[in-house]
View 1 (tube, helix red, strand yellow):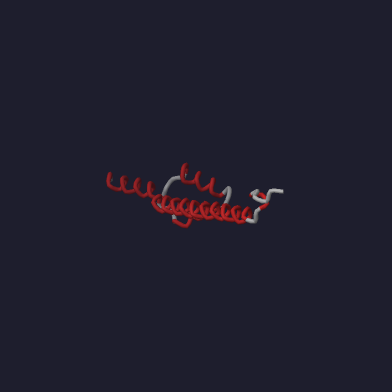
View 2: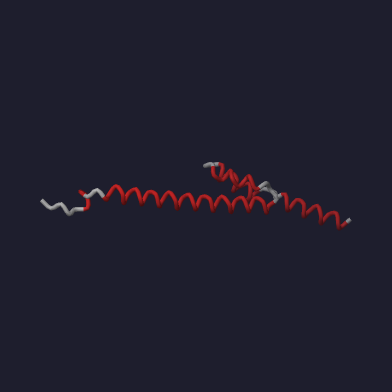
Length: 88
């Protein structure tokens, strides 16, 4: 009987744990980065940056994307008001 097979080795669970740990760590870093980007976008659009945190909630993130894509940004409202006030 050959005992050098990796499937019979005790290292397999450790390798799996390391792999799962790396995947979870990478997912966490990517999630933090994307959330930070959304917070910055909401802030620059004139909304509260806290709305970017709502993108962490499934389905709400799609709704918030629609708000950004189709909504009237407060910054643009203010710009229109400033343009109208300088015309008169």
